[in-house]
Each structure stands twice: as structure tokens, then as C-alpha cells.
Image (cartoon, rainbow, N blue to C red; front, top):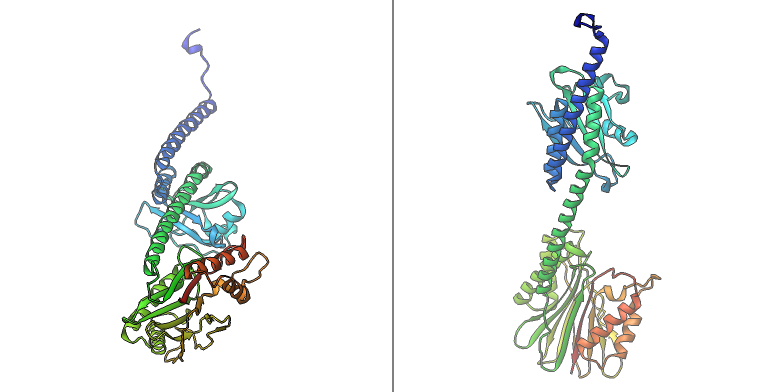
Length: 435
């Protein structure tokens, strides 16, 4: 049979072969593109770099003008709030932002969509699109059936429309990228947490350095103090401040709140009290001036309860003033006890306050216990407070112990009472014994 005898290939068959050839060529190109994309985003742990790579390569693959990755801030409870955006544009246009209606549609359907005439698209009836938005393709970033974000590209280059193949490819890119983006986001959150933990540890060390490392050695007296913050740092403050060769200031304060905000205010309180002590150690004057300074440097929502006492170890007198703090307990050698009830308003909420003083003599065997409300308000699993009665009992049973040993006994009793219940407030104690 000669070549002339061969039957010609029908045009339809040739066209089908050409189409198949084009499909295979496109498939090879897509596989090559997806392979390159996987290597590019898999080599980085930086979330911003990963999203930039995804956006830029999506624009190249689909021949779009602009693109954006939008991550959903699920932690806020508002699924419409975006956590991170990364945009890219192949032209000079202002980057577009995905409309809330588009994100809402994605939350509801979790499937890719194409809109070549968004203004006439009934899915987005009433939406006012940016005048430059001509067409778009959107694909969900889904991890374990949960929408983590959205990948959107806008405006096919040359004024053409997006095709089903464009939507399919963007959906593949989104599916391939979702877990990588989520892993990078979680990694960044972990690194942020590590940095915060390091900063909290440093803050805790700085705060610990602000407090007395040991109690002073005062002739004829046994002094001790201790604080246990409920978190890494706390708002309770105690101090022993040397006034002159005969006097020491004994302080215990409790800043409202706890954690880092309270610790910052505590540092301010310490600086204020120490500064005012060296100006005029009078108990009532020190509190009045400290209150005025704190009113000018702190928010009215914050306040401080504070007990300030001056111990004269030559005359054996104690002068105190109290700004709304728990009344310390005074135990005498004869077995009687009383609370030091005289007190005024807390520090930091009203300017120009005055405070009253009380002065009394100390006798051999006298015991003074200053404490924060973290002691008496410590709760167990049944929401029962430790209370002043239990505190009184522990002190009475251990009043022969040294000042530091008595503190440890009180702390032990509080923790025994609380059991497995978490510590909800800072715990602070200062004990003074007249030998």
C-alpha cells in the first residue's frame, strides 16, 4: 500500500490529540510548579516568607495581577477577624483586601470559588467591591477540617477570565500550603511564648532582687519576711529600710491585681516608699506623701494597701500607719493578742489624704505578724478561706518559734488548707519578735 492509499486523520481526532497533548503538558508544568513550591516553602520556618512565596508563585502560575493570604484569628472568638495578611501585586495598584462577605462565604462553604463578574454575582449581592476588582479566584486553607485562612488572587492578566483550571490549580496550591502555613504559625507562637517565658524569668529575678535577701540583724529583735507570688512575678511587697542608727522601717504592701502589671506597680511603690522614708520617716507623713506621688503616677483603677511601721530598737517603741491593709496581729507575752486596727484609705486613688499614727511600747516576748490577704483568703477545693481564725491558731501554736520558722509554719498551714487548689493570690509575711 502506497502513502496515497493511507486514510487521512480526521480533524476531530487531530484536535483531540492536540488537546490531550496540551493537557499533559499543563499537567507536567503544574507538577513541576507544585514540586518547586513545596521545596520553596518547606525550606523556611518564617511565616511571612512562606506566605510571600505562596502569593508570588500563585500569581505566576495563574497569571493574576494581585494576591493575598488571609489567616483567621480563631483565638479571638471572632472568626471574621484576620490575624495576618500578606499581599503582593504585579502592578502599581493598591493591594486589595478580601471582603468580609467573601470570608464569610468561605467559612460557610469551605470550598474554592471563581467569580469573573463579582458585582453581578448573587453570592455577594450588595457587596461594594473595590473599583479595580474585575475577577477573582479564592481557595480555602483547611487543616483537619478547620478553616485556617484563605488564598485569593484577583484580575486575570490581559483582561481574560479565570478558568476552571485556574480554580483547580489554586485549590491544589491552597491544600498543599495550608499545613505548612499552620506549622509556621504554630512555630512562631511557640517562639513568642519562649521569649515571653524568658522575659518573665528575668522580670522575676529583677523583682526578687528588689526585695530584701535577708532580714536585718537588730539587737534585741528577731525579724523575718517572705513573699510567694501567685505567678512568676507578683504585686506584694515587703521591706526593711534602715532609717538611722536607732530605727528601721518595716513595710508590707499589696498592689491590686497580680502578674506583670502588678509587679511593675510594686517596683514603683518600692522606689516611692524608700525615697519618702529617707526624706521624713514619720509613718503618717511617709504614707501621705507616697499616696500623693502614686496618685500622679498610676491609673485610678489600680490601688495599693500598705502597712508602714517604724521600730525604734533603743526606746523599744513602734509607730505605725496603715493605708487600708489587713490589720497586723500583735501577741503579748501574757497570752493576749489584738489587731492593730487604726488605718486609713488605700494608696493611689485619692489625692491629699492624711493618715493617723498609733504608738505603743514593745515588751519582751511581744510578737507582731504582718500579712497580705493571700494568707487569709487562700481557698481550698470547697471554696473555704483559710481565714483569720486559722491564722491566729497557727501563730498561737508556734509563737515560741523563731520569726523565720513561724513564717514557714504559717505558709505550710495555708498550703495544707488549699490542698490541690491553685494559689490565687500572692502570699507575703513579715514577723517581728521582741527577744
